[in-house]
Length: 68
Image (tube, rainbow, N blue to C red; front, top):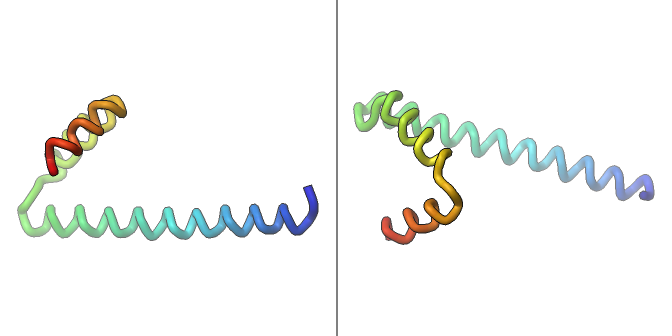
């Protein structure tokens, strides 16, 4: 691998880290606003996250199609 190729890869990884940070910040902000406004509780959020995390890919696809 040439030096410039390595630099390009490192730059792309840096970009991904920045994008990941901004996405995480946006999600955390939305959760905080929903909790502050009394729309959801932290416990409801945690339970839903746990449930979704334990679903298979097919179950998640089915859930998406039902919600449309």
